[in-house]
Length: 319
Ligand code: R5P
Image 1 (cartoon, rainbow, N blue to C red):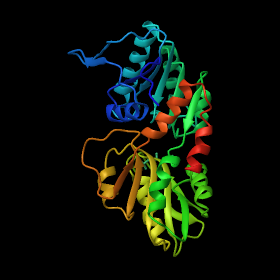
Image 2: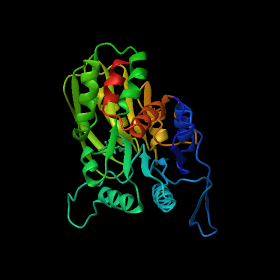
Image 3: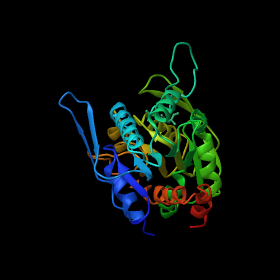
Image 4: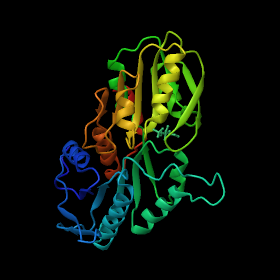
């Protein structure tokens, strides 16, 4: 379906132009011409080269590393569009950064995810399209519509190709059970959970697995791989408990600090991640990237046409 004559506009920040270009190609729309640069002191300089008046604009900008740069850029693009009289501004944020701080679980800490929601709305964003929020309740931090997609629908085909029989789906911690259960239901597999204790930002300890994995192939699922401490430690304990083949399916490959080395040396034969975050350096040999561009393009189409986005989940299931 071509949108060449419609008011649908796709605009990319500098966080992930490759993903934006892929979405544009799926939609058969050109990218909106814009210059996004830096002043000599590092401040962001933006200029749009097209009339935006009345347009239905989708800004593609995941807020992964460099997180603060990408967030401010997104805010300034939204402000530019608002002042250029865009009809509707949708922030397509495939990876929503600052999501881990979603509640005040101890004294004197921020609720960073709420701050992000507030500033996006005050910059002029009318709706948000995102994938696998760290906590689904973050949708409620926005007083604008949030369309929330699941990368599982894109990753599942790659998992099926691995032909993992006698399969158990495992969450590396209690927080990931909901996601793991969705995978388990979809793959008709039983569920296991690793008992994780976080010692620091980069170190976790795991001693027990709830559920039986001995003699089974295991699919470990998670919303993100940051330092890869969680997922690689989970691999270690699962092997120690008698698991056979190990495959990881994680949505957001943040991959910071020792992540690359940890994944390269971990016991998983395959690490499936989506491309919600851009990567330029060398990646581990066992890592396979699955594109979420077709999924996002379908959602953009539906939002633009004022059609149901939740119907997408059923479509993906049938496919
Ligand atoms: C935890 O709640 C998340 O779902 C991830 O398991 C965690 O953020 C991954 O972090 P890392 O890779 O640094 O262990």
